[in-house]
Image (cartoon, rainbow, N blue to C red):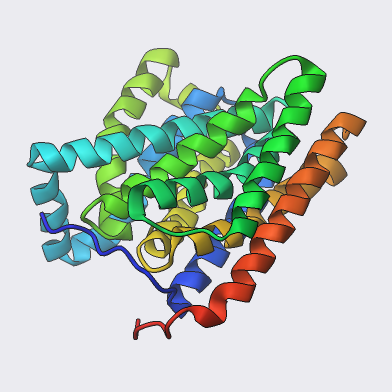
Length: 305
């Protein structure tokens, strides 16, 4: 399989795709709260299956692309890439849905605030992306924000850290994997959907129970395919057309919306310790983004998309 192209500049379509993805992810807590009638694992099983159904529709119209998916999954390397990325994606999905349904939206928001800094570190480690001293300073400030929570609570904010690390690793794997956004996500859901179906049939007494027991609930569960596939396709396209550093800057839109939803709509407590932690994270965001914007004129003009 040919190696994936690693972009060194940002394309306009890539930036637009990333912005849309993070906006949709930012408002998703409002949707997940409506699915509290099922346990998180069952929600993720539905999410995976209906995403696959939605993804297969356009591919069935273009059988050549569907053939690419099956040829990729006919090789050990192809299965390995997309099973690995699928596992990171599913674990991120599961933890975030669980956190949302159990009153931890603010902790989820903190995780996605931290994720861009892991994107930056992984971009340097895996792809040789260079960071300025100010951007490295932003990482140190963000680490101090996490440190405040660890010191005050005498524990690690594991929800935030696991969300940040799993999604950053997902971005790395998708950037290295050979297929584009639609084909790659189809491979992931093809590998994960059978596991989800087995879960639904073995942990629910009947099909109606697996669908929430009513037509409105079933409709919400089917809609998880659209709610999932749309931002992921945008994100998958963006990872292949803009730098991880730029991806990290744009990602701050998502956790900002999540923070506002958790605090202003669902009334999650904003303690003084948590406020100090978020303040340092926001300062790190400002330093990191401002320095990246200042350095943008130094980049060559992007190639035609």
